[in-house]
Length: 46
Image (cartoon, rainbow, N blue to C red):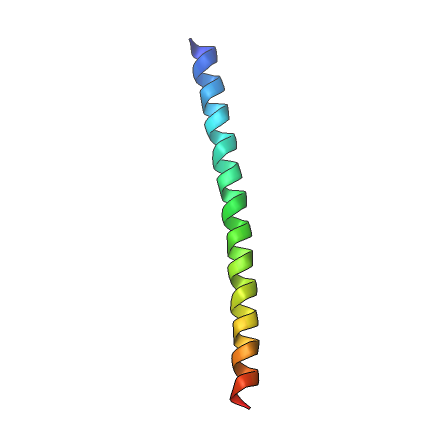
């Protein structure tokens, strides 16, 4: 029983790590889009 609980916790931990990685990728994409938008807007102003 204790073995199964430990396995479940390990599984949950690995899922959380995967979610964190996906979240970091999304953050990076958002930063990239934001930078591109700023560059695009600054070009349009001139």
